[in-house]
Amino acid sequence: MNSKKPLYQVPVPSVEFERDAILCDSVLCFQYYKDKSLCRGGIKFNRVAATRTRAERCCKAWHIDDAYDTLVEVERSSWMTEIRADTEEMWRNKWEMHHYMIYLDSAGSFELIAESWEPLQEQLHA
Image 1 (tube, rainbow, N blue to C red):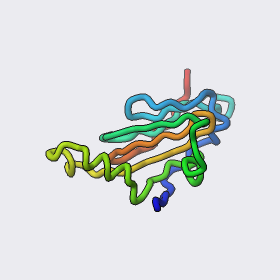
Image 2: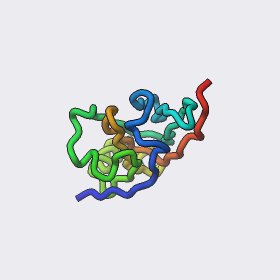
Image 3: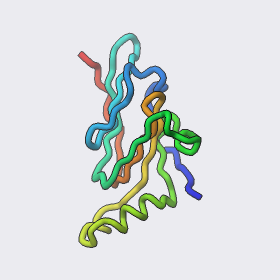
């Protein structure tokens, strides 16, 4: 059975996001109000090998439990094993691969196979 290791909590509850979060290329972006100012935040993923998303209505408890507003690493991931096996041999072991997942209210579940991640610095939206 897969386990989930918590890595990062979004800066405000996703129910308070100004609009649904979106995954654009290798960046998960979201907007929220903080001290009456509209802010942009997000999570950048590095060396992405694969992504998959599920609308909120298609998520099961497994996609939500432990991953609500929290980026987690899915350990012992069969999806990661599948992606690594499907990768061309010359690239298969070039970079680390991790299975990351986060569930955000109204937006659903986002999953990525990537080498690493980093939170984006909060920016005030002009």
